[in-house]
Length: 597
Image (tube, rainbow, N blue to C red; front, side, top):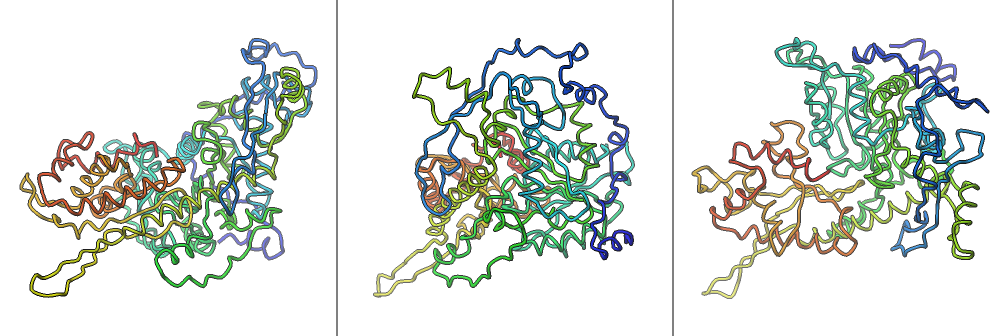
């Protein structure tokens, strides 16, 4: 118990974040600041002539401007079908006379070697957005800092580098083996990054509200040291969880945080879907299924931003982070594009400082092209770029030049949420039509029939994110546990793989992601992961959202009419990379590498 921190809180002051340096990996502790990067600060001295850095002069860059037609932030409407709004032109000039490096957006600086923390204008904007708009009520003195990343995958890898000593079986003692707590079903990044480092992946059970605090307490309180060190890191997505679509409430976050604080666990909060929270999901689900609409009370508004949309969203773990133990990963992948490979990390300053040291000797910084274009998009017009574009364009043909600025950025996010929410509703309504298989049989000698109703699909409408998470009740299939052509019973994994491949055939041509991809360990994969599928309502065109959803339902129903074990085996044999039932589970788990999820 930190009595000094309690004393500060009782006096109305915020305590500083905890010193978490004892959790740093040995490599992180030995890292020194880059003297070369530190010297870059001298380049900003007005009138300085640089003979020190190995930097090409801007005249040698083959780009005079970087231009794009950018969407209007009001392109998508929050509450009804939106119509296209004309694009506006943005441009990054070759050079800018703006003396303030935090405002100067030009190719002369963006395409040069730069600071590992990020391109100054964009970094400044992201820091303001994070501290004043996204998380304005930080709970420890001074609040968090930010650093730019090459997307959340890059950021997560660096965070593990920062806190985890690599462990190798047979070389290192088991008492040194690091652990990583995560959800039972989890996005694949903890597995692909943690397992090669020798980490012990430790799943925690969930309920309908997300990760269970009681289950987390049980794992940590009863930790078996023969498995390695008690985990001090936790990875989670709480706002539109991938793959389950759950949104973890602030109250549940407080409970989880209290357990993490008790056992000194750091929380890595990966939140690419934080703005995709669907307030209509519960009511629309009830309406679709003929249930009484839930009497849900309005969520308590806990944020104090000038934007009602952001205030309406369930807050981040940063809202309750009194210790500075939360490392949040954000990305532009879902708001601008995945290919831009741009995001940022938010954490207490001492962690950001060490994160920057890792970046200095690895990626150095995200792409200057991307950072400058995104900066121009979200910050606003630069007079030099506007004038240059006007000169290069015939009079009267130039589009209005404007950047989004903070109001436009938030409006864009709100419109995206509305667009994705409408897609989610359409997909779930289509799936709801096929939850049950209904059969009617009649007797020749009577005028009555027997109706049987079999539930094929179990799921809850997602409360956020981009995915619908389904359980297929393979136990009701006519061939469940029947002998196969290989004299082995047809089990759940076999049926799941067969259905996956059946859906890719004509006339269905639908590809879904199997639950095995998201199972946090082999036991979960073999025990229940095969029963689940994840469907993404974000990837297809507007026209195909309904068609693909309906084809999925039709395919599931048609699959239940297959009575031939040989046909099931033929479908399994067509699965890529599968060379038998023994390797099938591993092949299913590796699908994420070529599905790009």
